[in-house]
Image 1 (cartoon, rainbow, N blue to C red):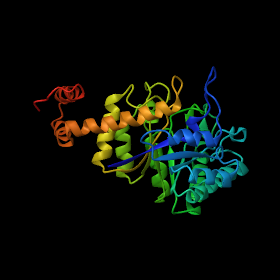
Image 2 (cartoon, rainbow, N blue to C red):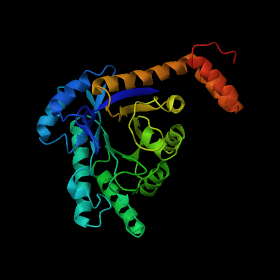
Image 3 (tube, helix red, strand yellow):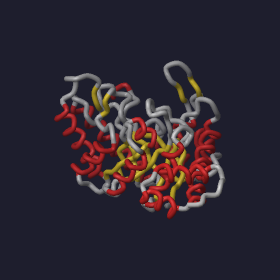
Length: 325
């Protein structure tokens, strides 16, 4: 496994909810400088259009930052015009605008030296029964993504699923629906971003979700974070679901997956640089624990199928106690 660590540049800036502002707005230059100070970070994930008010200036600043670009994150939800939807809006002109944004993001990805655009279409879905025409909605989604994919076949479109927010029910709500879309399109450059927190929110086992995506050849990109399986709190990975993080890394290693993990972690209680630095260190520590335990031993315990025996060994390894198995 080759797991490269990326910083989401947007999370170096303003962070707020309905009640408080936790981090102030910061200009792109300052956010790039902060990202460059994160130990272990090799790259950045940057957002279109919010980080590209001056496209040439953004490209220049990113290229001079010394950090690779893991992906361009396409945001088709934040501007007020997207309130009726983006790829699945009833208005054909609005759907065309979403596709145009996707094509621009793909062009910018190439200009920045990456072949990845990640997108979580959070505004596409419904809130009430009889609000959306599900047949038309799915057809519009297929048509929009297919048109974008044809624009730059050498650029991957990695679709990130989420159960809800901003819609009560998002059209791409789980890994199964994402895989169904990929299967329907049959395009080699359309795949999936597995966000660990979103998998937890959908009551999935994150390791199982990424295995399904990988077996289909559609695991393109990762977001690592954590939550209590009831809301997308974007917490430090392993802070709540430690064993899920360890299992996720085990299967990434078993799959010999090579790619980027970006960290969608909010900094409500600490400095963003410190939070992401800690995040990367925790992930690396978990990888080190796999080395201590041994992949062959873990596979043997899985094959034997005794959770009690497995966790006896895992907990002993976690606390540095020798295991007899």
